[in-house]
Picture 1 (cartoon, rainbow, N blue to C red):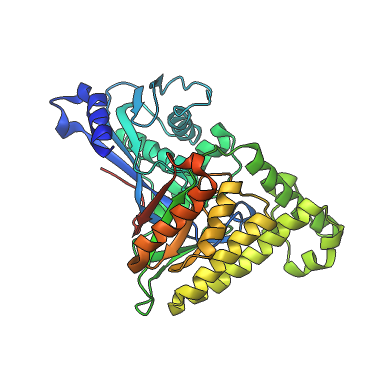
Picture 2: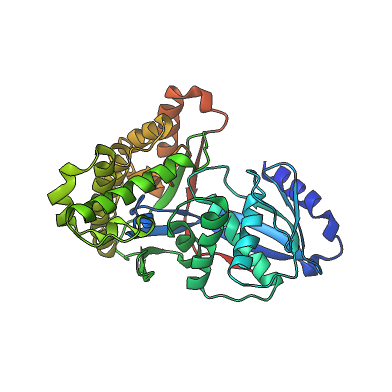
Length: 397
């Protein structure tokens, strides 16, 4: 499979024959969020790792504003001018156009386009591949046009394509992990202040690997994701009104603004969906704080237990999770050698992630695959299990 992808990539880049010295590479890792699920858009505190799998863009810089891109994983070619960026079309090319649009929207001049090919290293969903793809395009266009940004500004910029062009109301978790993370450290990010820290692995902590279990079924984020964000915002807005607090505009209202005791006092007045979304937010914030302490102490068993709790809250209170992901979560909780696990990403199909004992990888793979495919044999051709390590954030050279 990898040799086929390599041949396809070389076919895409035949136009650069003899110009290898002029080629550049942009790379962005996939990310996993062990604790802090579904709360970044409510300005909560989140944790994350970048993993040693991701998206690579091989490209050359053009002398004009033309952009020409191909993908190893998707058919067709994307071509447009940086001077006339088209409206979104609903296919893989939207991410390139969104990246160019964001740079223009932020006032950056773009005179030189790129020609290249992009590919991912895992055929999975739920690892924020869209953010990784956008980061690759942003870094490539920045290099082509001499734009330099520090990591914090790059995180802020990389939200603009999805908010202003794609139309997704997500938080900054994905982009922050894929830019700020460092190998063998847990990223802790306060999405309200933007402050972050990296907590190294405690020398006393047992060795671990990150396992990605792809259900074999993917789905793009959309109305289901945005609806839950709106329900959480609505909960914050109602709680402010009930408590006679200043509530400002709905667009800017988040649960981080509302003290937990206010929620406890007025939660019974909330519609059921609003209450559940808020219940998840407050309990997840508590799990993050407990998880940070467990990580500092090197207690991976406690940290993993909190991950399982987070997964159950995602099912019961955030009310996400396809039958496939719920089954994988159940299997992980009952498999020896798995410290903890939960859905990855929004939880609308895609993948689950887990921290596991690397000495038991073979038995874990066998147990999870047999149990899952016994219930979903139709996924046998697309289901996959991958083991990863932590890694550094995005780069371009």
